[in-house]
Image (cartoon, rainbow, N blue to C red; front, side):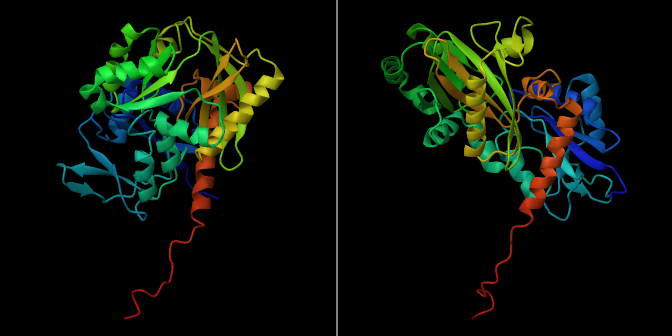
Length: 378
């Protein structure tokens, strides 16, 4: 038995267009986590990418502004497993073990948090963490690569192609003509590596295309051009688990605007979330089956929210994307779907931490030494 609480580092903020969304998720997680079982270590990351001390992070949670003077870092050493302070940007304060961390719960959305970068650092530091690993995080963040993987696994995705920002700057007219001739309107233009619908435009005609690509290219060097469909319904399904993932009930999003953009997600109160969705059991089971297949296709772990488009005209279901760190406020779709499935918000947080520890134990069964005799035989 443990003689102390499990110390959980909550990573939030970050150098991303989803900085504010991450802050909101962190406030909710810290408010709901079981304080009898877990000791929370808040770790804020500024918009510039600086990690700040737990004390300053706590102040940031109260003020809503993530900033601080005390730069922190994780020891890049499996024997450390600690958060340490950098003094004068050079000297490291490693005199105390009070900053030891047992597990990290990242609620970072978008680049530099959900894309495998932080996950790689946590692997090197040998600290268990909630959610998908390096490869799954990177694949799922890049919508182009994600769709390639889905298509290779026979999953239903809408037609798309990707253009590079450099090519857009150098030959925009040629690309405009190619897009106009290649994909029927409406078209969705998206940054390939971002979430929360930041930088996304629904384009109805050619005159709107240039401005949409300019916007998306301001957020990413890869721009996704994707076929849209009219008269759709948007469904979402939550996944929980590691090697044996489970699905929640299916929910429906009825956006206030033309599609589920940032305004509809976070600002417009007219957006409705219908949980469970009013669909037949056959459609719900099909969505759940595809959701699990998508989760397994990218080798995700812990949690994910899988998003779908449903054509009212044809009855076709299209896999839109998988989110490995979905919005995690108490009113976000991911936890609400689980609450409707019988798992409370607090218990969901506990289950995710336990899944992180389970995956860490499984990884530690791997052999890391091979006696090749290369260094002993001359």
